[in-house]
Image (cartoon, rainbow, N blue to C red; front, side, top):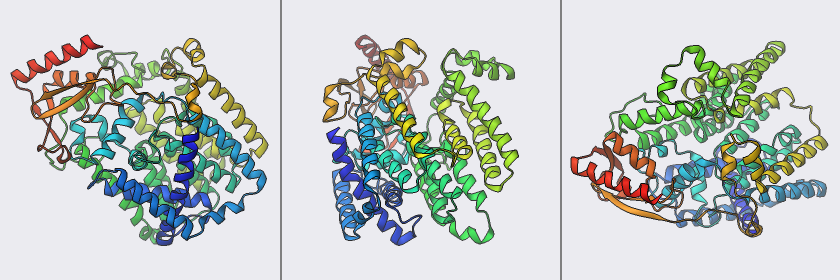
Length: 539
């Protein structure tokens, strides 16, 4: 907890400093302290997104960024903004700060933390964005700008990767500035996203902030659109947000304000092409003829996994392929898992939102519902996993109950929800025994005393090194590569490459020059078979 507090004390002023610089150049959304922090997040993430094409986000990049941010914080006297809070508000924020820091000190338990978040951040801080990186591991093709942002703070100020704690504190500052208690009311669930640099938290929260700003009359289309595209680059399933902002403010005279958002989008597209070969992961549309396109068999396997996850891995691909249209629907609603209730609630929420929109019949609600409906359709078509549409629940709740929640009720609900969540994270055996289908519960490790001074984290550091062709690679003696030196491949990835008859290769002798793939020779396939056999014996 002490370490996380120190990270907050360092990072928040730096973000506010960069936010002030951003607002001097591009204008301001609001003049509040939280607006400076969110502007700092946007500007620093985009700056590092550009830099990481050329250099890794190492200790030198972070150190220079910290110095610039701190200098701006004190030069522009941003600390004066803190005087706008009353003693009572400071006290309440301090209590929330303690809850958030305590929540963020638990062991990570989101599975993507180990196989996606940490390996991505490690690669960015060691090598930067490498051409054709998806050929090493397809998971890197969806690398979020949020992991670029986290990587920039991962060398000195946030080595345990708890940037989401800093972000949620900024969100609570925004809530108290705007007196938007509905946002605090729905915040307990966000405590589950603090142990990992999950892009879900900033994507959902920033979408709610942008939506709330529009509801409250903010008409700064240039920044609202740019921030909405930024949210899309954090998590592409938030496609509804830039669509909504664009359509809501659509006028010919507003088109001249699109340039900043378009620039953010173009950087995102270029990043995807650089890593993946196509503009939008996982869609294989827009072939620019680059030489580092991923192997078709690996792409096919990834698509099949996404479809299988739609049904919580309870059906094989061959079984799903035999589904009739009604089977697709019926089986999605009747999974042997808590997820079926989320699916039912999702559909009911859309239906309710539709009736609400019809009754209200105003421009904002109508365009918002149309955007949400289109996003929901796209998710259902590609991979109808509940985590891809969870943001819809928050949007509907905000629209329906916008000004109907008072401060006392919000504080009570957050406190009550926080107690339940912290209790379950401290004693995960309850979840494991009572909700056996909640698989994440099995990765929760409970409370440990060391959390009082540093966040809990896993450190196994057990791996073997092999070589196929010109690639030396490391394979952990467990399932995922969260603490394995790069280039790292999981045992499952090695097996999939063997089945596809291909293997990643360096384009040159330098890892930073990127990756392609090649077909395995007879001898290489035999060697890889022996490697896989040795890995299975170790596990």
